[in-house]
Image 1: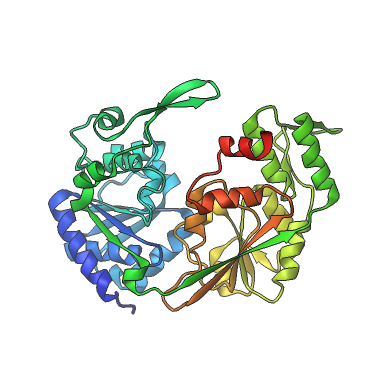
Image 2: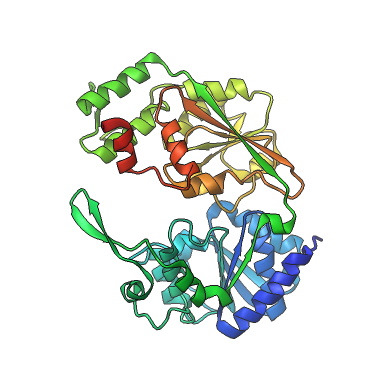
Length: 411
């Protein structure tokens, strides 16, 4: 049976007191510091009978493992559910609801569907929010995370717009169709004054992690046909084949199509996908042939390329199979960036890179463990492609946007 670390037990005791007093608590603990076990121990301290744990599908197994290995199964019943399956649930007899990766509820100015569903079903329940990055892009992201509970510290504000009048420096933003209000500039000190008593923060450094992330950039020469197609699309904005069309009539579509094509794949106007260049997949296989690797890809057709080059006998998309066999694993960046551990991989390899700074900072930490002192991450960029420019943006905690793309390519 596993035992909690001393700091996890201490934090869960503090969180239990907050939850008992306020009906909501936020465990803002960095990746690998043990948010899951800490949150389950909160329920143990409160002596509840039934708990709902909402998480991503790929993380469900590890949640159940923690529940069993720390012997919380002797304290209370746990129901672990994929966020996207919430609409199928009929039960509502939970004593506590735990929302994993709660920053996913942070859309604004309108709440996302998941936030609406949670508020409708569980607004009166004690809620534990979990995230290593509660407000990754803006402090305005905190409003709807708290809004799902009737115990929100912002309950005096009927909706986000009323809240924004008090907490946000609203600006005008220019977009392709005109102008709109930009609500992202929330006042950090005002926000924190409202939520500080509900937040428990903990870093990897505080927990004793000494792991170093070593990032390496490697360049892959793509086939000349790939470069020719990219140059043609930049010039003509359309490529017509016998049966398919590549169309980039807007800046956004040109950015997306080049992002795909420089790494060797394309999604046509029809919706069909095709691998046009296997160079990256072959490069990865050759460079890491003696390693057990975790691979992050961006586009669906990139997985098709990896499966063709590696073969089903050497590659899986299932975490349990990866952990129990010698196979490598390929995961889509957004679905794999949170809530899972790739500690059994020797190295982490990126087939492509996401436009999102959140994806960069969260996904690169999948190798980290308390015992591991060094993590090696390899970015495979096409030579003279678009990935370098995206990398520079996300490293500086900025998303790669259309305006950045225009400066890079359309000036």
